[in-house]
Image 1 (cartoon, rainbow, N blue to C red):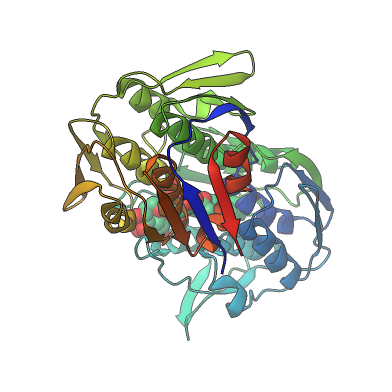
Image 2 (tube, helix red, strand yellow):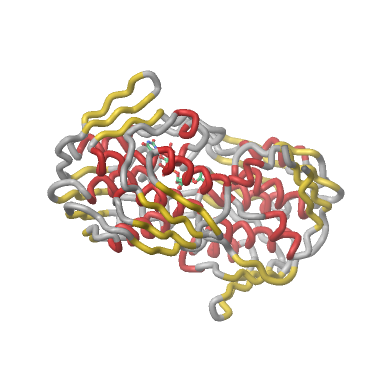
Length: 418
Ligand code: EPZ
């Protein structure tokens, strides 16, 4: 298993290009199952989760090729059962449910297990698909859907933690080929959901209210092939903003969309990190005085839960007390114990972490646990004195394209050990 070794203390400088969005690409690759015609998806990041979704699409009967950031899919035929050993490893594979139901009027997918950030239920997905007339059963760890006559209806997709991103995706994709009109209330508004909706419209779907909490979808007979470029990854961009901040550096981000990062820019600005547009680029100035800043994760346009660990690392070295509250995945604090090994002073209090800034972190071997916690540990290693060895780097490779290479390109003393 690969490890990443970082010798902290090097300032960053220069520019880095942000890759395509993992969380836009995954449902978009699932959406190619909605048509028998050829789909060309560009700007797909070369990460294990993306390669995984291509494998799942292939296992479901489609021809698919992934080369130089472009995925070409022709789903002339679609099977209705996603194999367990593929689905269990990536929770996001649940987003093939909607397309399979829409295309084949039946689907069978293993119920995704939990993961380290907490249980990952799909009850709201199933509520939405039932509302379209699907018969839903759970048997032997598989969810089985039958829906001969998918018919549009109105459904509320808000849950205890707000809306559901992949749940909105699944219901929207099924509704696109259902008879009649579907209204999704409390739909997720994340940029990745907008990107999927825009792709579906290019395929011939009729969707109104894109980007708002109420989506209206008029079902059509069939969808046609499409060419589409995935939006850039706002969480990768936010991660590099945090990297510039923790190393007190100035870094230029290329291909980042500041419009998708309002809450992150707002909290970083509050913390003393200035971000400004320079033409199509973003300049991040992390060399000012840092101020303790509270953050609460919320559904978009609130502060993204996927940036919580990265922001916590910045607060861990910011003099004063900051409160980081996680309202989307209450268990998403696996990084706290590992940061404590580096000398961070963080106390957990229910859904909140009380972060007392320390003067310095000191390097040590740490264990990655989930994708964004791993990114947080790498950021901590950039600023910790001495060497930090991050184990189980496969977590990182799921969601970041060449993160160590990109950081090295900015001057970080970071290397990957086989
Ligand atoms: C997407 O996951 C992202 N993954 C996650 O990013 C992200 O953290 C999450 O949205 C929230 O923004 C992809 O897009 C592939 P949810 P998703 O359904 O759709 C609860 C990363 O690091 N819920 O919006 O699975 C759920 O438990 C990953 O890139 C139900 O209760 O998340 C959570 O508390 C991690 N019932 C909350 O809603 C349901 O049926 C939000 O989950 C569905 C969700």
